[in-house]
Length: 139
Image (cartoon, rainbow, N blue to C red; front, side, top):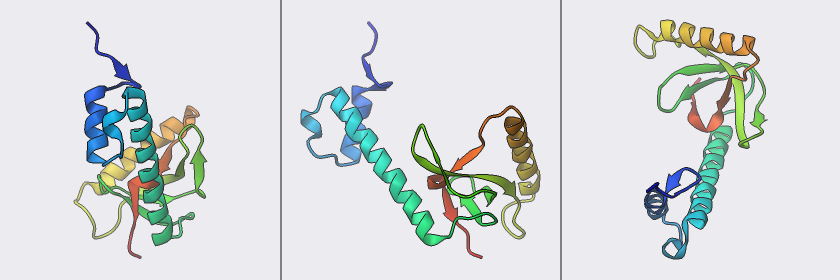
């Protein structure tokens, strides 16, 4: 017997997310309603994080941003654009190594990530960086 999923998520996963996010009325919702409620929560969180960043820093070409989980630093190359399929605010950027921050391999990692981005650009693939994943760096 195959497991019934709702947009790729099982009912237990959706119920756990809804409980964690304290979504009102979750006990009476079916799988599709839970999926819609959880996705709405994710969308609201993404927008909140984007607005926090935009309030903390003027995101324009030349600004440095740090990835919240990896610590990688990027230099913004373009103005903020909307990634159409998802509605996320994004920028094109290059990875940089910031003096005095991180370990000795940051320069190598930045060069490696930039080569990968250059290869994707050459194939016509977007290399956008979603703003909700980044935080402002102190100048």
